[in-house]
Length: 377
Image 1: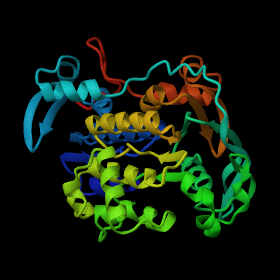
Image 2: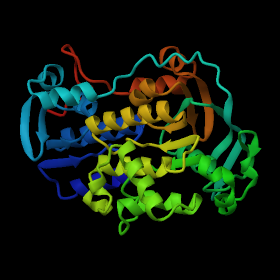
Image 3: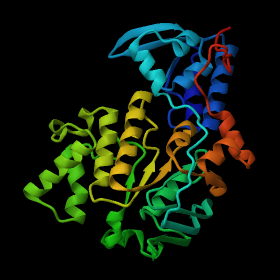
C-alpha cells in the first residue's frame, strides 16, 4: 500500500522520467510482482522513461532493457540487460552475478535431530485480526528451518512470539521441554532460558541505538545476562568482533558510521554474544546487495557449524531459503499450508500457494531470456 501511495505521488505532476529507487526492497515475491506490473502499466500508459535502481539483479533482468553497473560512485559496466547479466565483462559485474542466489532443489535433510523448540497451536490476534492462527512446528538441534510467506502472513509475529518479546493468546511454546510460553514476555528476561534464544532483527539500522557505539551494542547483552565487566567484557566483545569479521577499529564508532553489511554483522555479534542455542533470524539479508548478502549468509553458515546453533530463518527470498535451509514452513494468512524438507518443497510442492510463490520467484536471465515485462515502447 505504501509503494502504491508513493507511485501516485511521483506521477501526480505527469513527469517524463520516473526514478524508482529500490521500489521492491523488503517485499515478498508476489507483492513485488504486483508492484512491478503496476509500474510497467503506468510507464507505458503515460509514455514515460524509467530508471530502476535496484540491488536485485534478477529484478533488473526481468524488467529492464539496459543495465548500468556502478561501484564506488563510478560506472564499471553498461550494456543490454542480457549481455551484462549473462556475459559480464568486468570482474565486479561477474562478482555480482555469481553472488546472486538461484532457486535450487533444496538441501536433502536426512539427519535425525533432537527437538529443541516445539510450538503447538500457537495463536496471536492484533486489533481483531488473527495474525497467527493455530501454528504448530518444531526446530531440531543444529537445524535450520525456513519460514516463508507473503508480507502479513505472520512470519515476524512468530519470530517475536518465539523470542518471547510478546505474549501469545493461546498455544504452547516449549524449549528443551520447558513451557516458556507460560512466562510473561515482560518477565522472560529473568529466565535462564533468555540467553538461549536470541533474535537478529530485520533492519540492522533500526535495531542499533543511534547514540551507542558498536562496543556498547555488543556488550549490552553480556552486561545484562552474564554480569561481565571491565577487561573481561572488553576481551569478550573483541573476540565477538573477530568472530563476525568486524574490525576492532570499528568498536568505538556509531551505527551511522558503518556500512549496511557492517551493521548486519554487529547485529549478529550482539545476538550470539550470550551463546544462544536458537537464533531467530528475521529477514537478515533483506536490505543488502547480493555480494554483501552472500557474505552474511556464508558467515551465518560458518557460525552454525562452529557453535552448533539452530536457526529459525525468516525470509521472503525463496532463492536464499532454498540454498540455506534444511526444512521449510510455508505460511499464508497466519496459518501453515505446507511444511517439509527443502528438497521436497522446492521440487514437488503440494500446495497451490507454494507453487504460486515459486512461480513468482525471479531468476537471472539466460541468453534466450525474454523479459517478463518490457518497459521500453
